[in-house]
Image (cartoon, rainbow, N blue to C red; front, side, top):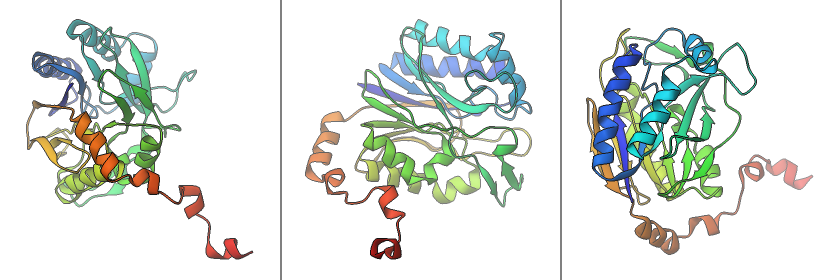
Length: 284
């Protein structure tokens, strides 16, 4: 089974971004990919009003969700739709979630993951600081779903810094983990590949890391280096910068062998809840 990771240099112009994404997904399909991952904010990077996009999509007047369904159906491709601003189920206004949607090859949305960890941080780049919580609501649940390639755990960008989430996905049976991202150039140079390889090694999963990779409007630059990384932490494919598509076969048999030779999940002695207890509590 072949998987694909798409890297883009998206901007605020939705129609242009969708046209670029379509070309890259066509390349993935032509290479035989069954599953492709788009980057975070693939359709509207730098758009100032996420709530406006979410409201249009909720009213079935937005372009992004129909485009994802049509593209998946026409290409017969399972697509992780990067992120799209979406209101929570039953919500009519307020902050949207940064939502990663999985569409199957028939164009049906079969899974949704709302970003759990929002990027509120100071970064010594031209933008200076990021406060994602000003425009987005926090997700509440993990998502793991079966695909033709394997059982997929879904994450988004800043989630990469929280190994507990990745452990929960592995606990739920994940074999692959999608990581649509827009890592800054500064933090990416320092931490992107280190974190990806660590999460892959810890979970013994294949990581599909689709990053934005270039200079965007409003003084923002992203790191690129989208990658496919195996359960041993090896970088199987990588794209340093610019828009493009990388593919690789999922080494499922080798992953199973790694898990058998080094059965770390059988050796686990503590859950997160148990580790949170103190020695004092244990002696009382």
